[in-house]
Image 1 (cartoon, rainbow, N blue to C red):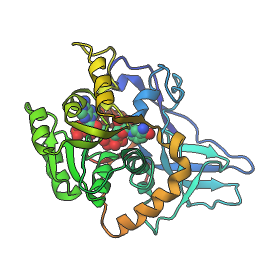
Image 2 (cartoon, protein in one colour):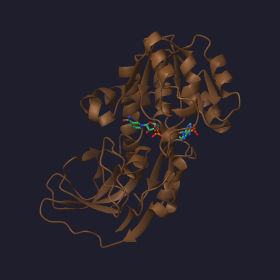
Image 3 (cartoon, rainbow, N blue to C red):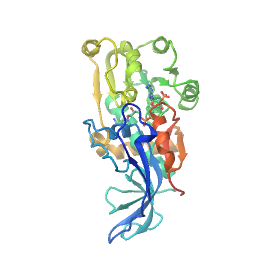
Image 4 (tube, rainbow, N blue to C red):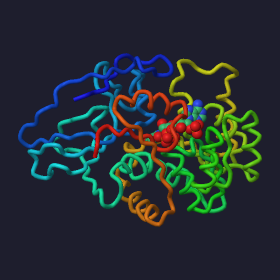
Length: 337
Ligand code: NDP
């Protein structure tokens, strides 16, 4: 049983030295238990937070423990009445080949309905996050302007498409020409701005002639700087993530603009609300699924996965996720189907 463990805590951006690949015995199971073999492992930005021991909404991974993460697994051996060998389940087994379960928290997946890996993306945590953050906090109305950053990623791509379904003017922000072309052609946004462009702020302003009514915040940093002056009175800002800051070791240089930010919130009477998807919205998963399944079946939502082969490739792929190297929902294929 191979495991990728947290060897050391990163200072700034993680490196491959922060991880260790160790090999051990395949665990055995007792009465009432099942042995799960990981087929797919989800890589997500929140894992950077788990590598750090700074106080957060969830406990850090201990040094020497396997990294945590959502997994799609198959039952390899079963002493559990409800599970047969070969069954597909959504689990939270982390960065490893095998895990023992007593069945608690597992969700059975039906591979005849959609590819099982979708449970880690469009039908899982990122898709659900996009749906709830946009619709419950963002409250977009037809004709309004919605801006979303990291717009070709697991969350942002779904935000952009749901906002289009709701009849909004959607402006995507993404890193590079290839991602922007994808956002325009496949996600159907009205404009896409490359945040690496020198005149990024000006291009964003030009793409939002009516200002911004909903800014779905995934990124922070200079993207938020460019968005802030464009927000309209009554704007809503679901604060989903701040990925540009996850590797930061200190506050950015420059003037303190907290007063300016609070002034904007006051004068423009903005709603700025953070959320942690399963803590806040777990009870509404079925509502999301009932909306998303028909959207997928009717091709109203386009979904892109980036599948990388092999558990050993996970550290490098994860490091790349924090640098924008992923294109679509990043999933590791740990074992064969
Ligand atoms: P993505 O698939 O979008 O991958 C991350 C993307 O972020 C990169 O591809 C890159 O896209 C962009 N990015 C990285 N660094 C920067 C930077 N410095 N400036 C601008 N963009 C950057 O990840 P997810 O969709 O899984 O996650 C998106 C956000 O949602 C994250 O902030 C994550 O933490 C948050 N999240 C929050 C949840 C919650 O419950 N609150 C749940 C799930 C996710 P590009 O190349 O286009 O810049």
